[in-house]
Amino acid sequence: MKKLALVALLCATSFAQAAITLGKDYTVLAKPQPVANPKKVEVIEFFSYTCIHCYHLEPTLSAWEKKRPADVDFRREQIVWGQSMEGFARLYSTLNVSGLLGKLHQPAFEAVLKQKTNLGDEAVLSGWIKQQAGADAGKFMQTYKSFGINAQVKRASKMTRDYAIEGTPTIVVAGKYATLPAEPARLMQVVDELVAKARQERKK
Figure 1 (cartoon, one colour):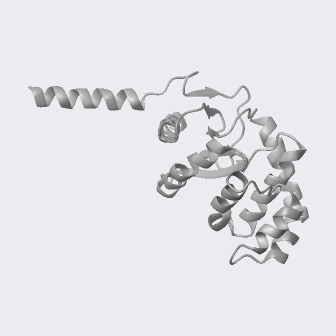
Figure 2 (cartoon, rainbow, N blue to C red):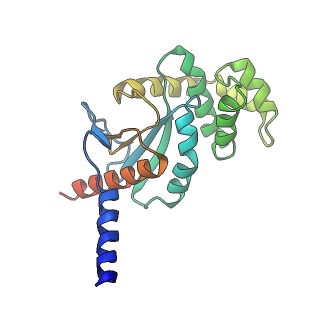
Figure 3 (spheres, rainbow, N blue to C red):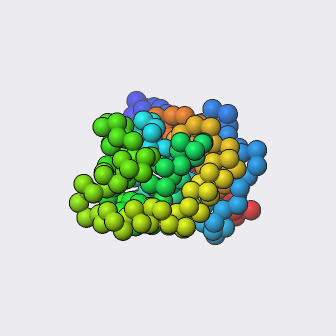
């Protein structure tokens, strides 16, 4: 009986931890946004290289990204709340386009938050990228100033407004469910529940 009671308690605890509540764990966007691929559940992390909470989330999020279900599309977006943030959006987009995101995403976080290096400043970034092994600094900065990156920065700014992002990290699922602040493990648990919710809604 004691074993059965323990099992029941563990199951109940697990269920309680997994359950999510509107207004406590997540909100619904006032204006749901279109997703890139309707056949998949879209998950977007809105983050900033200047955000310490995003930095702390990154290891947990990266582990989740590697194991995410096949029907889940995931990407990040550097938020742009004003002109001072555009340099960071430009940095992120250039890392992504150059194929250096996997290698330099974490070092960029550490440079900004730990070493107090303003990678949002073009001149500072130029010096930093020259010190990164495997990066072609000349080619990187050329891409950084390109028309394509300009367009991506404008898109990031528009998305920040359209999704009404007020804090980071915010993870939006299926273009309509936005997470509220939580510890990394709990936040990703909420994301999993929202993915399941969105997946179920697609079947209706």
